[in-house]
Length: 86
Image (cartoon, rainbow, N blue to C red; front, side, top):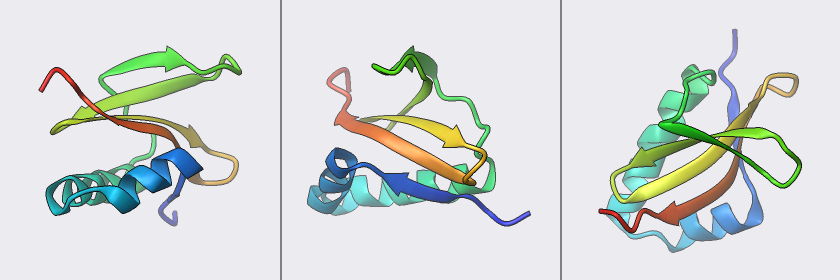
């Protein structure tokens, strides 16, 4: 089975492009893991505006909302934001 590809929406892509080196490295490590095991659950779930269940993983200082698109073999990243709790 080939690994999934990670697809970032525009907002998430801008976040990654503007990230400092530490945050970029943390996102890159997560992408490498999630592409190998796309069914990995997040720390909690939430629904998007289309009522799609999204996983949210909390990493370092980040919260990443994503959902696996098994038909396309992609992990779709819908949002990345700074986790204000850390």
